[in-house]
Length: 392
Image (cartoon, rainbow, N blue to C red; front, top):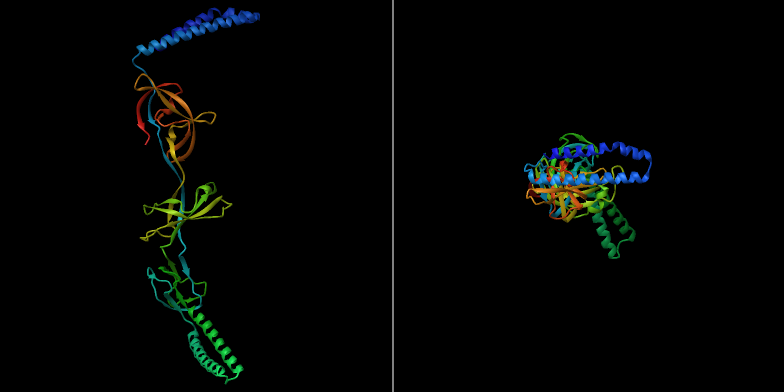
């Protein structure tokens, strides 16, 4: 019905203008400025009269037409809430107590005292290497050292009693001290034939079997691991340097284990890698039950920004115009309870977390924002509200 009225009025206007088309052309061709201006004013008046008639027809249609085809939309009420933004990284679990044990002495591996999976304490004897007669040399040297000690003590007593000569006393002293140094040096060599645990942990692997000839610093014999001192190392883009500091709370998730722990940043690196513009951080990982292993993949979330009065909206409701401005549609109420007018509002956005984005400017607490159907409405258009929900 509405379209029929518009077509009739438009046809009348075209007919009216068509009757004067020659006169308009003749006036333009005449070049008379006064006549051209007068004709323009006449046409403008006709246009205003047509617009008024259209407004009257639209008002009548609005009253009489009970069946309206309005865009159906849903909306939600914006509200201020605390917004925590998290920097998400991927890291790898490491431990500083995961080492290969190499012998300090070359020879035959005569005894292996531990097995894989065994817990050992710091200083515990793990294996022995044939010393090639060093222990016998040490025993002989200790006997000589004892003799040198006895001789020195006697010469010292005589010297204190002013009986012996000074040169005899000094010779006995030098001989004793020399023997002691030789004994200590040989003891150090014999000690190298034993492989001991440098710290407490678990023998993760026995790499060399008993009876094998080993070379100092070349043949790995054991892998010793301590799972009590674990940490995660991750690379952080340099842009986050002002937001990451020691003792900052961190959420760590292990996808393989399905476990989540809360810990803190233990160390922030002081060097930015020029190749990828990142710096390293270390995050302590509690491992009471021993399920976390070295090289395990971990997802790290660090809170780098908080806004206590943020307005969050789904990214799907934000559009962008030709000027690069972002906007959303809010609704203003009308007389009808289920109808509203869509209004385009330019917004300034901040950080994004998941499917939501922070709105810094353009919206206020309580604004009703169109959600579903936002892509199909226009500024100033009348819409039908299907529902208004809370933005939770």
